[in-house]
Image (cartoon, rainbow, N blue to C red; front, top):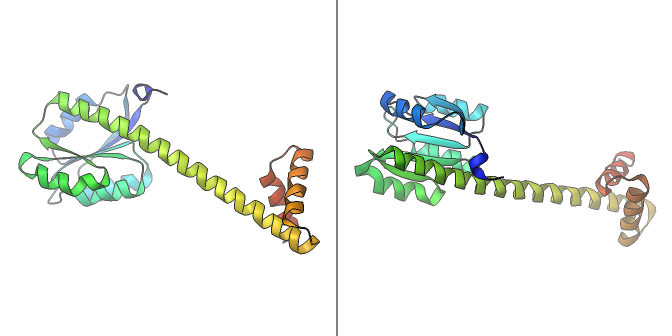
Length: 194
């Protein structure tokens, strides 16, 4: 699916009404939905516990907090693209702090065009992160399936004195005859011999 077709969920963490009004205008509902605004770090953290967002945009500072720790925590636990916006004089130090975590930094003031371009970069990043997350999940599922099948083989080996090759063939043949997966056969062996 082309990322232009996707609709992205957005959490904006900003205590500036002017900034929030600008983003409400830019984040059209056709491409960005839902768009939630939080004015402090604590309410943003609560929101992130309730729901995963594709984008998190942090307008620093937020009530005496630079939002950097929040940005790093989001990228450590979720496949979310994060943008931290800071005053121009703090941009370089902020960039140096956040870039190792894959967080975008943008100096302000900025233009609407630069913001829209940043959202496009975030969309690209989000697509890449989503694909990596799917691959990781798929690999973890496959590893779990292998462990279950191996556990069933060991039950057959110990209980029925089969070789590993014989146990493997028994699981394969049962799966084929019953038109079910080897994992389902293995789970049945485990359940009936526990």
